[in-house]
Image (tube, rainbow, N blue to C red):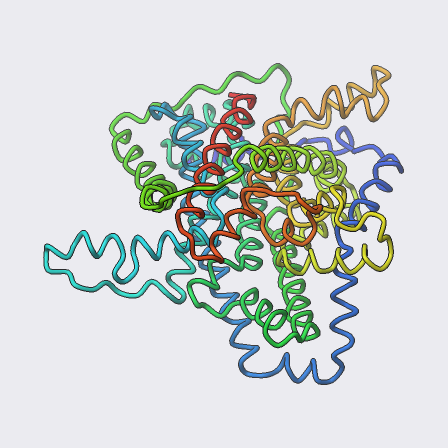
Length: 539
């Protein structure tokens, strides 16, 4: 009997008995109009793709059905599935350890574990090849022990390893925010009824994390589909590598657009799957009274394994690439880097983009969490389409439209921010939406009953309660913008220089010393910025 009681209690606490008492109000038309306009702007590249793909005609259909094209699609789906699974298996334990336990140096492990977000994928892939590839640092270290060669790192394994270490933080941030917002009464009730800690987590806590898991997993999958640097350097034929070849080598933009349209269709399929996984979207506490502060879980004899897990993750994901970058700088000679100007531009544009995207994501996330109709929820979910497209495609689309329709804003800062928003809006929408699903709508109803206007309810009640998720989304956007390259190269104003642009220039010139210095500065600035952002979250 004890095995069934916690499920009954959990459902009773997580779902109201009287649905009419929780009927959500009709959404203000201004909110829907705002969300629609934002969505129209960020989905502008899809119109460009449709025009390009339509121009291919029947030749485009034949190219799509070609065996090599189908092999590329299969490779991309296989890589996406593998990265998604490994990111969840790594991200959930790491999020739980840094949010809910007495793990020593939790803040350090969190910041260090999230730093792979800011390492550009092409730099990270080069670092892993230099460390673990044939004739790399590891092989040179093992040569005195008779190891003369190591298996090649190229292909599927290298791409999977690199992208997994770059994407698991996308799972960590929303899941950690959800863990910080859960009601401890649910787990305490399960423990009081005889369930072990693991069983209580699996049957009580984990179901509450479904929206956050779906959001983080979706972001990891979309990152995998849209990443170019890692798959190109690991010589794995996925969507982005072939699209890049079509754009730059054959100059056949119609074929590249066809592949990009396939990317959009795959993204839609992932969105549909995410919706099925999050069919029950309300995970708020419905009882009366104030929620209690979370108490850290004592790890006890699991403390050493937990520390080893975090150390291994940080070692491979952060220390190895940073160590390789440092070796490049130490082995270099003269460095001529405009540190101050690049730092100001990088931090400034990343901060502007994070704030702008957070404001744009709020109405979309609110519709996704609160909308009573499918149309409202689809407005939120369609915002994910931009994240499935390579930055090169988004940038070229915005260059095409601004140069032909509004040349006055061509290569200006607002267009650059729009490019970032198109690329990274889902990062903020997912984290914010996950936080909103944990807010009891009775609190918002109470605010309206006291005479507050809808915008006042959102500003005084909704936003403060969803602060952890909003800040997590801002952190994701901030760190992602800092390393974004194609969008910055094509849309930035003339003379505008960032760390990512300096890294790319040095990498093209095969100047590893010049590559390592700005990359290390990027990591250092990102670490400080991330620590300041996470310092404001709830505990």
